[in-house]
Each structure stands twice: as C-alpha cells, then as structure tokens.
Length: 229
Image (tube, rainbow, N blue to C red; front, side, top):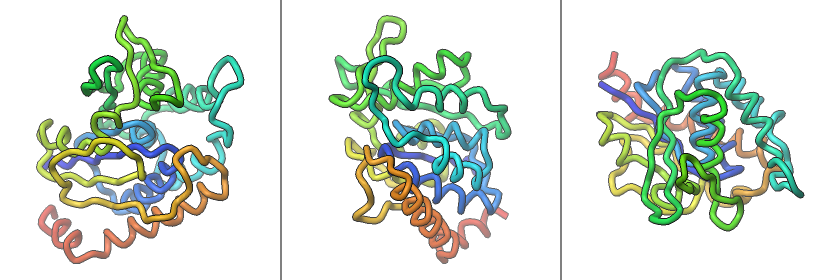
C-alpha cells in the first residue's frame, strides 16, 4: 500500500511538525514519498538527511531566531545550504509545492536537482507574500505554495498514494478537498508562524511529540498498522 506523508506550511510552527514526525519515525514507518508546502518542504527534505531526534535538535539549535534580513542574504539561507549538503540517509522522494505569482496556480517539483537549484525551490515555496520576495526560476516568479494548497493531501492521492498521513504546521491558506487517512492537528494557542524564539520552538517540539504519540496509540492507527503487517 503506497503511503505518502504530507507536511503543511506554518513557518515556526514547523517545530510542532518535526516533533510529531520524530514520534512516528521511531516506529519505522516508511513513506513511498513525501509532499510538502513551505516549511513542510524543508521538514520533508530534512527527514531524508536526519533521524527523528536529530530533526528536533536541528530545530532547536540550527535555525536562527531572526528570520529577516537587514540587507543581503536572508538569515536562514546558510542553514538551508548546510541541510542540502548533508548526506542522504533515506531514499524517499520529496515533492515541493510552490505557486506561480501571477496565476497563483500550483507548481510541483521533486527535489532532486543540484544544490543551488534545490535552494531556489526551497526559497520559492517559503516566499510568503508580503513577507519575503518572490523567487524567479527560469523566468517565472514563484511564491509560497500555501497560497494554493497549504496541506496538499489531494496531490498525494493524485500521485498514487492509497494512504496518507498529514501533519499540520498551523499555516493559513487554501486546503485540499480530500481528508488524509490520518491527520495530526496542531493544538490552539501555539506561537505565531514568524515567532522563531527558541523557547517557543521547544514547546512546539514537545507538543508535536505528544500528538504523534497520541496517534500511534489510537485504535484506528493501530488497526491500520496491523493490516500492513
């Protein structure tokens, strides 16, 4: 049964997503592919480079607390460059959802390009309108994929998944019409999507881990896992 994991957008709330994934990863769940929007793409790519606990540490120690440039390169660009260069430990493909600026239609790309091109697509899918500038690639301007599909469950099914696990990151934007088989929802009253202070990240990692553990213990998920055995 082809399993896909879908990671939604949500800026700093991607820490919740990372915590939830770490809980699921300890069971050895292996997706056929991953689909992500915005910060979800970065997390999805990170799962191919880092084990679950390492992803949590990456969120706590690597990401800067200041996410805006006072001129020059954005503060998180060096972190993304370093992530891209890490050796791959998992083979599943990672698909990034961006949106064309002019039409706001989705554009999907698999992150298997050379490093510089991967970086451009990561910046494109996280180019929140009004916050970060659009990214031009091959003459086309792209913005954050959340403007067309913040949690791209439809795409995962369209690409052949027969089971989908979606992990929210509390972003805003359009949503797919179909509902994933399992969705880990972010709790209310989490820090804002642009609030990257370390204390908030630690809180969201913990809440994500707890939400992931709750799903693992649910009768519905356990029944599904038994069917796959």
